[in-house]
Amino acid sequence: TSRIAARVRRIKPSPSTSAADRANELRRQGKSIVNLVVGEPDFDTPAHIRRAAADAMDRGATRYTLMAGTVELRQAIVAKLERENGLRYAMNEIIVTNGAKSAIYNALAITLEPGDEVIIPAPYWVSYPDMVLACEATPVTVACPEANGFKLTPAQLEAAITPRTRWLLINSPSNPTGASYTADEYRALAEVLARHPHVMVMTDDIYEHIRFDGQATPHLLAVAPALRERTLAINGVSKTYAMTGWRIGWAAGPSDLITAMDTLLSQSAGNCCSISQAGAAAALNGDQGFVTESVAVYKARRDRTLALVNAIPGLSCATPPGAFYLYINCSGLIGKSTPAGKTLNEDGDVVMYLLESAGVATVAGTAYGLSPYFRLSIATAIETLEEGCARIARAVAELR
Ligand code: PLP
Image (cartoon, rainbow, N blue to C red; front, side):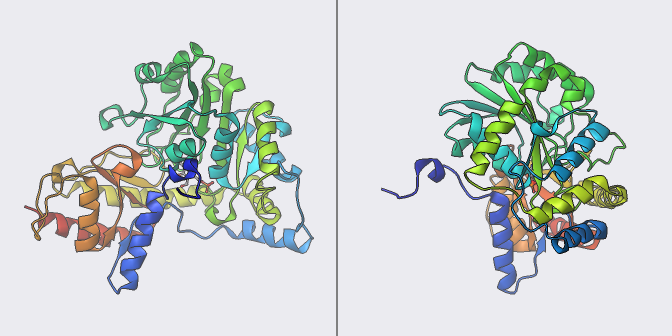
């Protein structure tokens, strides 16, 4: 018997963290490793945001804040939702959380009963299924193949809904594929949801500004306002403003959900860091130049890396319209043999081969629920991406 509860024994550590750990271990052993694992901006947080946090500290904003977040930050979020998404929320419909991650987990925790189901289109962000399992509920993953742009179709949604469905989780642009729903696609999904009023929708909007196709990211609720009373919009400052370490995210939605999250968080984590909240408010209220500039840099990296990857025989990658990853199809390598005589049977074998023989660290598609693929992050210097691709090309050329 274990002294760890079954609901925790059911979950596993994040595969991207494990991949990063393995790469760091090899590096410690003296191997040269090109690490294309991490999904975080390599930029520093913009200076005006850092200054706002330092000022907050100096003015004594070093105490507990309201559980739901400072009035200043929640006002900034209200203004952001209206300005950027055309959505109107009151302050009591918003709660600030320790990153978007905590918003998603706590929203699941306050709503899921054992055996409830959560529909998760695959490929998905690695944490979704495990968060659902940690709440003693059942992740219902739906494979969304590349041929459909890695997107959930209305027919797939209809087929996945049961009386036990509590949530549909939508992440657009998506980690790991960058897939982004258009307003028309949202409208079609909303028509299905209209027939199933018991299904709530969580939108993970964390990559909304990381877009390369010149399109603004539409919000499901702007397209289908009738869903407002059963939709929770999740977002945060981590990716947009290079603030992953500050741990500020939020949920916006109907006040009964927000109040229940407030209660649970007030008895568990408590409020978010007061200084980080001041920084996040400055990020949302301040000059948005950093966003445009960083997205231009990501786009240049995406274009360059995509060209290099697609020139490698056996690999192909669709052009991601957003987020900062390439989800690379490696079906052309499955069944081939390495110089050491090992057969590559699945994407995990490909990733292991690239790491061991070429020193390039990536994450296998199995982690995201759709194979055979592997993910690399383009949130790193272009020289690093070029070196990584050159190594992958050499390693692939040695397969038989
Ligand atoms: N949602 C997705 C799809 C992500 O990729 C990430 C980070 O990797 C998060 C949420 C978590 O963001 P935060 O740093 O706000 O917790």
